[in-house]
Length: 101
Image (tube, rainbow, N blue to C red):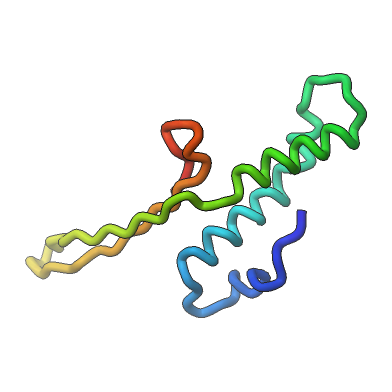
């Protein structure tokens, strides 16, 4: 699995966009698990067919369906308040609960 050229500098980038990080980590995860997914397939089809099926499934999962941004106040032990900003990316909304982090 290839990480797109436009995303290859994400690990060393000072302040990458959230969506770019989501895309980068998706492609990196594909690199880590793709061979194992092919190996774990139980069907008796040729290895090339297994590779095509896994690649197709990963391509279906790739699009990020939603990115949610949330902000909420947090009161520190010192009594100070801080606004916390959080994000969640949701993939594969065809299956619930949605996958994301």
